[in-house]
Length: 299
Image (cartoon, rainbow, N blue to C red; front, side, top):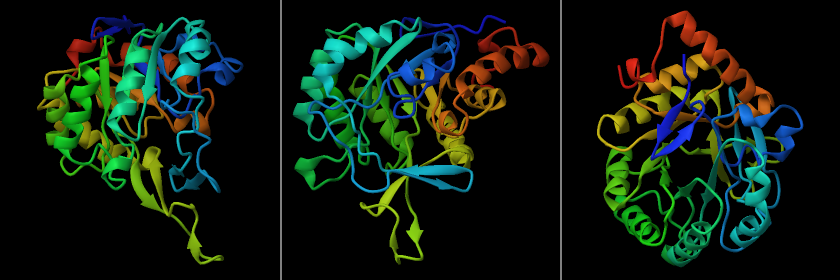
């Protein structure tokens, strides 16, 4: 089985990508295993202005998952272009720069600068709050998402992935709006908005009250959303949400995804990426799968 797949003209040696926000810039994990075995790495979420992240608890374990409120701590787009991209390029795999923003101007400035960097693809995180519209995330309403994606598309010269929030009013409508605005591919889903309460302190665990839920617990819902979107869009889709095994990868591909991103599993098992890639080849042999085209979207 040849595990490789091509998305927007970019060749991935296999469909397993480390998800943004769970893998840093790859350096720490590379001390544990050769991360070049992965199909790709999506960088820590970048913003135009460097951010220190949120105060208080940032990560909290839940049943079959975790919640996070990290707050996009990152060195900023400029620092990544000047130093970070070159460090990531040492890993012989597809380099995806993930970028968020608090206003359209920041998205455009960041995308323009990243287009000049040595990256393979740009992943646009539209789950960020739009400070100019009262803090509502760009990824909740289709018309707002269309506006920011179109603005980025006008300056972005790299293949553009748009990462969708499961908290959108209508995930299929959102996907179609982003596709119409110029997205070359989509990735979904980002984390679900959730709440954890400290019963001893009688207050929310997180300073911002709500935080993002991820991990195995969300997989069935994420799988349904990926399936719904893949039935309606023409662009390739990266499936995300609770992937911890090679079997999970096949499920997302059968739902229509072209590749997947592994996130929370990297925390519970730092060798998850390496393990999934290894197991994937054996599983395909066991199931008699000789090509991704045989199973993609078969459900």
